[in-house]
Length: 193
Image 1 (cartoon, rainbow, N blue to C red):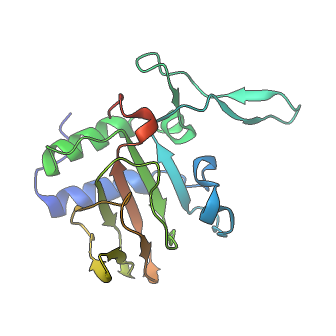
Image 2: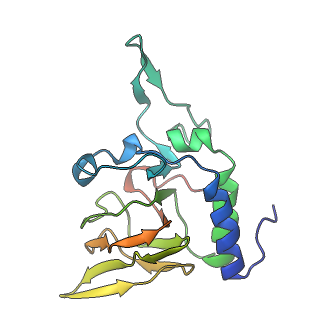
Image 3: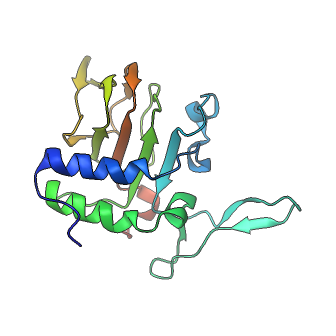
């Protein structure tokens, strides 16, 4: 695939056009802890892209279990977002190979106009790459590291930090803000996007 140019600014614009085609929702994968209490407007949300160890998705209108699609390669199950947008896997791989080729990841957390409250990524292994895209003001990430607050600007610029070690949160913002977090989940570290 040749979706990108190799220029970070151009490629962020291209990646944003792919995200504009995605119908964001409040993903069940994020309905724990802080995410249960956050009200998310329609068309916005926080969704996990990749695979999960959870085979069960929900119950249908008849009360029957609805199961996820099994990934034959890993033996795990596709997240709802991965099932809906399978082409994004190649998009994320290509973007990552151009702009952070040494960084390996198993999943991508996809947010649209979603303000994360203070949290730590307890299921992640080591460092993550944060990338924000869109036409917005504010929306920086505050990282609490060794007694100080670091104000990270990841707008059209991949920012690497250890979200499993340091608390972090999103500042207020206006406009349309996409945030992608490329990371490795400790429960599925044998797979890779």
